[in-house]
Image (cartoon, rainbow, N blue to C red; front, side, top):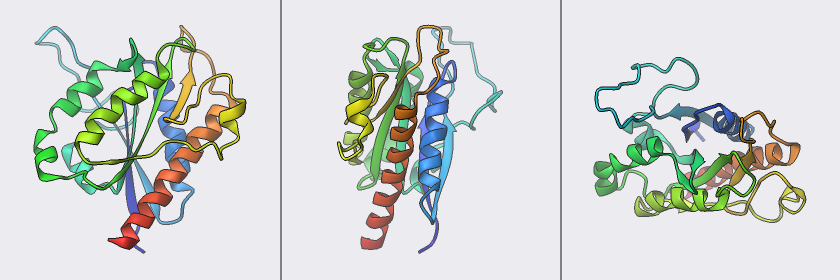
Length: 201
């Protein structure tokens, strides 16, 4: 089988969600024949003349709509903003109507991840909020099954809805061993599922 590309799309303000994205990419690339393409979105501002540089100062390049067309599956991540995805990520999805109409993402698998400043800061509702545009795009949403033993032992994040991380108010809490294993497992599961779907198409 030819190599397939899985898009890992995230927004990260202080680095925690980016670290999660890198772990998911690690899981994807642990599957032979699968590549992870890390992409981010620019910040948005209420000041209309404020702009981001065309190339991010650090981290992954900005996502382009062609990345959606070229991927065999998607891992989508955002920090929590009052129990919802960050405005920058919502802004990106609000601009994908053409892809929605053409069915660019229909039938492709997707999974979700987030990080929060407080342990009960809306991890699961953020994952659910990110599912909504993906469902409208016709994507096949994947969670984390309880066959992953870390779901029963974690005290720092992790959910059947997706991988999570409790970063602390200052963003300095390291990703725990359980959260690391769950993120890698989710990336691997996404890649394996995308491969199976490619074989059947």
